[in-house]
Structure formats: structure tokens, C-alpha cells
Length: 523
Image 1 (cartoon, rainbow, N blue to C red):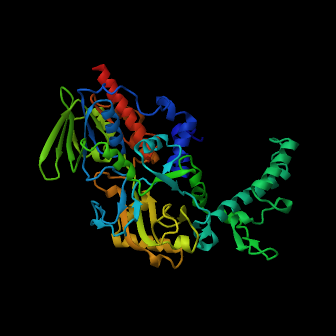
Image 2 (image 1 turned 180 degrees about the vertical axis):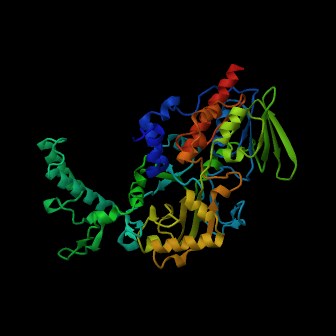
């Protein structure tokens, strides 16, 4: 007997195909996202509610910065403790001179030229992420279009054309044409007679002819939507669209379909955006408004309650120790980090924190002459390849410039863990070989590689809270954390169903700020 599919199964099946976007869409369909009430932006209060109250915030990532900004507006005295020498956490833009430290491999110093950069963590903003966009408008952060999909990018799969790089537009339109042809045949053979009237069938066949670019006899034989085998030049000169790839070849590997619908997910759809000059423009804009509130190079060693509020112990960058007492604390540290700290948290909250697990992810970025634009006419977007490097991700800034930064590896889970087990030289050579499969003969132009393995980055210890079915914390664990421990509350992307996005961090932060306001009113 087949086990009935639970809501969790439903969400997980979506996430396996569509990632975070799929899981979020499934949660919306089940009404889970709105269970805490409709999102209405940051909590609005007068600018004196927090007068005389002090809040210590652990972490100057997006959650911590948003919380500090909103609490400062409400009159609280705010102190942010940040272990790094920069704001942003996993919103990190790497440039020439940046040092990337890991706990398992030697540090790297980025050697990119002036003006070149790559976003090691967060790298794009969906148009549905209204809170991020609202803050960018408020902070004056300039945005530009992020090209998430290009018809000229490539699919490389051993089961597709013997591993030859195939244009994205060809795969998309040949699958659409093939499916339309099959559905037309099924309709004409009466397979849908129980579902459709005669008029419905006629309308469906007409639709499929246009949608799938079907020819005579409702057969798909290729289309100029897929590009040309013989390019058009002048009138009366011959031209020829590419031949159709058979459906049996297009469906030979399930990863082709998953990659094909990548940009169809709610959180990957056009229009995507990015800050001009790097994603870290957002945390630095917040930090500019919190110059006196943020302490950098401060490593928290203890968090606990006192009779009057909270106490935090920390180590300064010069080796000295310090402490701070406050009325409240918002802890935005990744739980992978908090789990290793000495805390005086209650048993239910500590158990809830320990229930969270984090995911592996990694990137390798290269500076290069822009061969993908100059010779293959790829402007932004992603090429997918069946290697552990997983993809090549093209820059969306400074089109037609001489040089740019190509992300030659962006991998997850087991792929990322296999990469992290290699030396830097091996990671770089593996990434170069993967780019060469997508762009044969071009990878020799790649230079100045830099890599990041997020599971081994100090003060992060993971890319985001794991979305694996086996890693989901129980509802009781989540409830215990969301309730907080008296004057201590928590925020971060790990506490939002939106997942590994800045929007998740912001909405969770707003929730925590509202909790602080409620506690202030109650007291």
C-alpha cells in the first residue's frame, strides 16, 4: 500500500526539482507561508518606544543590520557585534586584494584587476522580494538588470548530442515542439475525448501549432526559435533552422528538465536585479547608517540571560576580552556557529538551535577576456554542465568590456563536499576543465582563480540552512526557537521559508524586531 503523500513530502518533491523556489511555491500553495499572518513590511512604531532600552545584536549580516536599523529608528540604544572586519555575512563581494579564509585550506588573496569582482554569496534579487528592493530604494543603492537566462548559454550533458554544447534556446524550443507534437497526436487519436469537446480539441490543436511551432501534419521538424543551421543573409539567399533534437534524447537525463525550468521558479523569474558594483553595496549602505553601533572584529564567546536582561561575552581582535549587558538580544548568528558557543539558553531553545543543519555550497571564479560575449554572444545567464562544477555563470555587468569575471563552478551538497575535499589547485583545475567542456579550447584564457567552500568559512560554517528532507527541524524545535528565550530572540534566513535569500533574512529580522517591541510594551 502506498503511503499517502504528506505536506512535507509535497514540499520536498517540489524542492528537489525547483530548489528553494519550488519549496516556497509549494508552501504558498498549501497556505504555509501565510500562517503567521500576511507580511506587511517592518513593524511601525513611534521613535520613542525603545528610549532607555538597550539591544545587543549578534552578527552584522543582513538580518542584524536590518534589526539594528529598525530598532535605532524606534529609539533603542543598539550595539552590533560582528566577528568579521566587514558587514554583510554571506552577502560578500570579492575583489582584488580580498582575502578568503577557510578552516581547512590555506587563505587566498584575490588577484582580480581593478573594477572586477564576484559575489561569493548572495548574487541576485528577484523582483518579488519587495523588502530588499524597498531598502535599496531607501538606501540609495543603485540596481541594474541581472540576466538569469540567456538563449545563447549552453547545455552540456553526455546523453545530449554526445556531450556537445547545445544552445539553451535549442533545448527549450525543441522540447516544447516535441511535447506539442506528441500531445497533438494523442488528441487526434482520441486520447482526450473524455476531457475535451470537439471544439475544445480544435482550439487545443490550433494552440499547439503556434506554441510548439508545428508544421504540416502537426509535426515538429525544427524552428528558427532554436537558431539557424544556415544563417540568413540577404533576400533570396537560403537559410535553414537547426534540425530538431528528438524527444527521446532530450528526456534521456532528468537533469536536463530540472535545469531547463530553473528560471521558471518564482524566485528566478525575470526581472532579476543586482546592485551596481557588487552585492555588498547593500550591507555597506546599512553600515553607513550604523557607524557608531557596529563593533567589528568581535568574536562572541558566551550568550545568556541575567535577572535584568542578557549578558554577552566576547573577544576583541587585539586579544582582550569584553562583555556587554543589555535589556534584549537579537541573535542572528548562523545556528551552525551558535551551536558551538557557550550559552545559557534554556533547554528547549538550545535543542531547537541544535536541530538545524546547514548545506554545503561552493564557487570558483575566474578573471578572463570575455570570450563568451565576443565569440559566442552569451550576455549573462547560466550554462549547465554534467560535472561537479555544475555550471558556468556569466556576468551581467559591463557588457562588451575587455575582461570580466566568470563563475566556472557553483555547486551544492555532495558536489560541493567533493570539491571542498580537494586542494585549491585541484579545485581550480577541475573548474577549468568543466569550463572547457562548455567552451572547448577557451578555458586557457581563464586566470586568477579564487574559490569559496562555504561550509568551511569561519563565522558562516555553511551556505544556508539545509533544505534536505532529512535535515528539516521538527515543528516543535522551530516553535521553541521562534518563541525565543525571554529577552533573547533569533533572526536569520534559517528562520524563514523563503530560504537562502536576503529577503528571508529581512522578513525574519522584522519578526524579531516586532518581538522586541512586544516585550518592551509588556514591560
